Image (cartoon, rainbow, N blue to C red; front, side, top):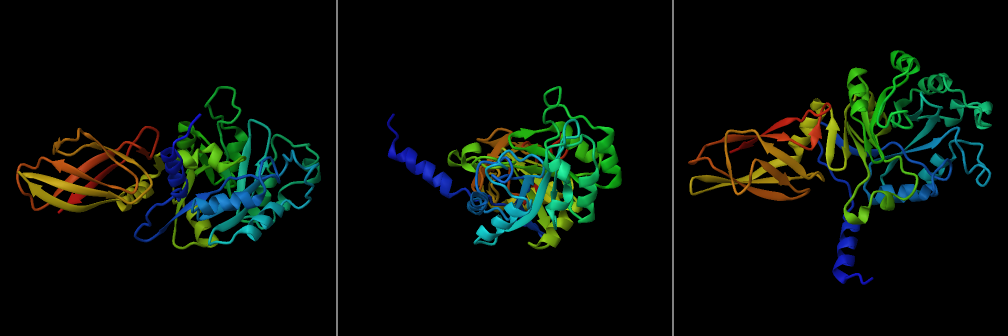
Length: 365
């Protein structure tokens, strides 16, 4: 097989331009976070330094190291009685402003499943000697209680995983108890390659933080095809500053939007400001009684917008795409020069509830 020089250069350009970039909001920083990752210190395939290097290349702001506490398939080859070891190594390897937070994955048999606890002080206190030996009870609140004592942020991982019906989510009485006691604070609506509509509805019904993560075990570049323009799913956290305290506070206040496969998922109160910060009318010029409007996209999302306004477009139909980090020119049939007007769009690749898309207005002056 012959690979052209152009193909190689294109792949290199995409790989070098892999930084995940979103604009800040008026009163908050937009922090790119991955709160679910693994290394050889549980069931991953790489040393912690690789997780750190990948995150630094992707310009991730916050990386959580979340090894399984109980599931340890490599323990014979890499014995480590201290469950904080992976986090300790990751912080040692970081040479940038990447913020690494400690965490762990609480591993329980179905139907309870798995949960991540982040901002831990000591992961060892979340499991017992019996669990180390592999005797893991199905319903056991002890690790959740221990995480709560450390004031950790805890979220339900991949709720659709290993359900009897593909894509289903089963809420057990144990889950309801954890919700009512305040031991579970968020839920992954996106995990790895999967988006769960049911999990999003659970986040809304039980007032949980909307989370999305890579759950990476192998190499980010391979799993998410970075060289082809892909990206890992991330949680965008809107915090006052880049510190553990501020990020943790923002998570508990549900100030998040998930970015996955060119889709934004989050509550309207944070989704709309993010879209408003991303799209800007940079110029307008009138020719032949039509407004030629330039719209700039300052984010990594390729926005897909449906025209809801009273104006028709020339050249474009009622669906408009604005590429990531790019500017388009839209010809609006205004039938004359207007002092100002509004363009209203439904954002097709953003949702605030199952199958519900936000509507934005762009002011043209």
